[in-house]
Image 1 (cartoon, rainbow, N blue to C red):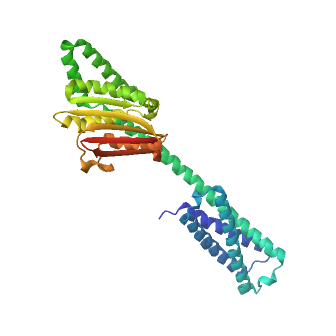
Image 2 (tube, rainbow, N blue to C red):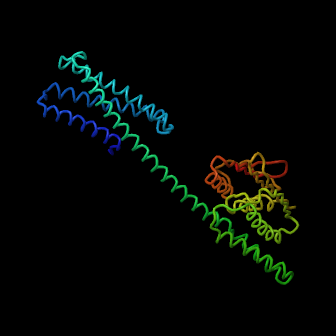
Image 3 (cartoon, one colour):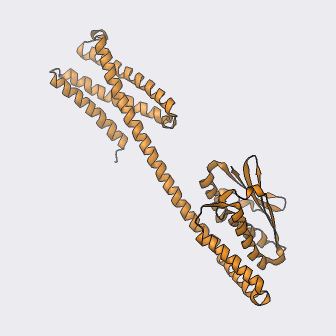
Length: 341
């Protein structure tokens, strides 16, 4: 059975303290059976008392406290525990040596209390130092793991955005336009080049809404060739939102999702509306598409990859400052993102 580091150092520390006490008593020719018994009982008492103290620390999460509050509580606890150990020591002296509390001089009592206080202060210093080291280590591990997960997520997102059916449909549409409308075919090739460049060459994790809107316009222009009059795009972007930053390709992912799960399933087609505005110092970004929301797929664990990836990226970059909402509004599906500025 593996012994935890805490148990190992707790036992070794108190054993070392007891060994030093016994060694000093041997050097001063005061060692006897009673002295040995007193030190063994103090060893057990020290382990028990500090272990209960540790449980109290963990229960009330002292490590999370501000420095000032933590120092006050540690100082108070150090004093109380010193008095407890001193009481145990004097009771043992009275029982085994016949020396009661009054047998000791004031200087001896102050000296003993100071020694115990310093001993427990060392215990506190070592314990909290180790706790902070472990806490920082775990935080770094979690940060590295989150960054690794994000990179994996970005790779999957890129692969998801490069959907084969979209690429084939776009290429077929361009091929049909080569003879029918060469100018439009050239424009379509340029737009596809822009999308591929953004998918493959984009290195920034955040980009301006202005750049993301331009990418969406390229994407919808290609989809417009396929859907023709079945696809309509409305843009309602307030100027003061254009330079706000959002996760790269997030908006395109939301629009793709609206095409895939909304417009493409409607025989008569529909409309995609992208809207942005600032309200109460929050950036509001909405993608509204014709369609019916499948209520069985609105909870977190059943969302499509694109929407789930969007939620995770928002949480990674903005934590609690970002909100993600997906809901039905009349005959449209609304994806509403709020980012606190």
